[in-house]
Length: 291
Image (cartoon, rainbow, N blue to C red; front, top):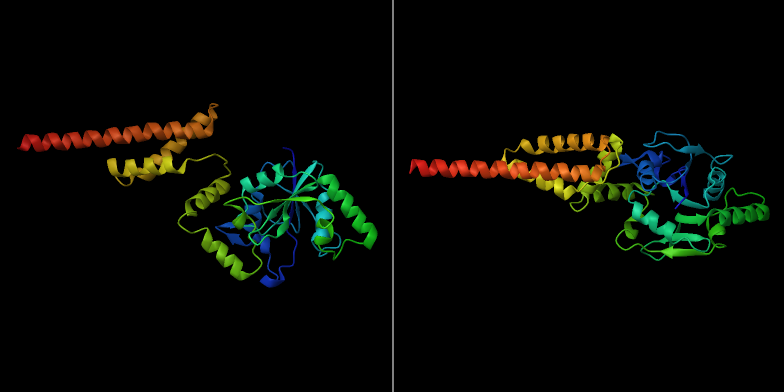
């Protein structure tokens, strides 16, 4: 599905004391980069705000004059898009994920689709819109009011037919935004919880290394366990490193990266089990001989 993405990153962050909110880190990745990571397949990604470093290339723009509010910022971003569907996001969504983005795009009938938060409120800055519907209503509002500056987003969304989307399991987190220092602290604590810390860490590492490959975490952890128990504890990180290197070589020769990792992991795990079995056999033989 072809779509463009507009990320609004130019707010004043008054409740955070005016800091550069999109640049604040959560799990060692900026809020902006976390949002950009949820829509990597957008044909064009436009960030409305001041330029700052990002993990992937984006197109920058700004409403004129700056500080005109979300509707003016959205209009500025819209001028940089050409796809029939546009994903509109705020830059402070630490838990937005790709399945939620895909659900919004798939549900964008009528004028579009908006994420519905756990309190039953539709979120216009976590939404997918049909571009022509946005252009039409924004033009009408500009004509009616003479300007878009200072107009709230609800002036726009009140005139649009948006399908509400609730994504079981991800929606409560996907709609979570960081407006206060307490929100930021809660987000930082949440990603370090036992049930999510490994996925968050793997995502952070892949972004830092500039790679995008599906990783079967359980398979790698099982391999590390077998190498540690069957050989020696330091064998665990060394073995997983060699598996990654072998998978990279296979991928460079045209193999599917995920399949290459799975195959290299299988071979290394089998080797670790054979190594352990041989060691156990030798120990049994030694005990038998000494008897």
